[in-house]
Length: 174
Image 1 (cartoon, rainbow, N blue to C red):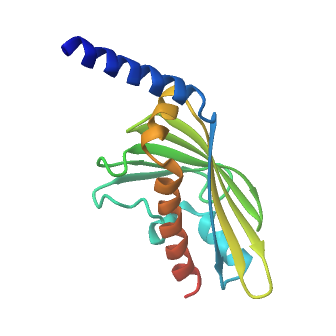
Image 2 (tube, rainbow, N blue to C red):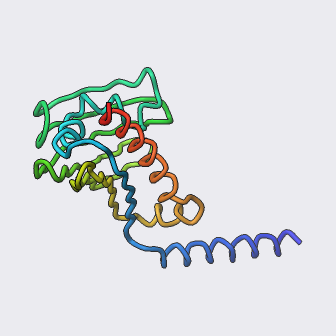
């Protein structure tokens, strides 16, 4: 009986590993919101890490250590943090901007999992509002492909983006 259970577990493990190999090599998470604020105002808020405290969904640790370096705002600005298990440790750098339409960032997660992601905020001005789109792109390691079988990363990260964009809307529409 024990032998049958061991074989069944081994077969299940092989199936999971084979299925993981067929998973996409990339992750793309994207959420948008329309905000009744000028494109320039939103660009200024997102382009300055010091203003992120008002709207980021990732301030889940009141004791989190935050450091700012590089440029005060825009290209070259760096924000690093270290906190509890809810926020981990990482660093995000503004790598490019196209005022007032786009801000490109390089996200380097250190804990709980090592990862490097490209993050983009796109701002599309309309008549009396601006559509803000928050995008994350990632190359999946094999380990992340296995994790994605059990964890819906789009739903998890996208949920955070939705919370952050809703907070951004409140801040910008003041």
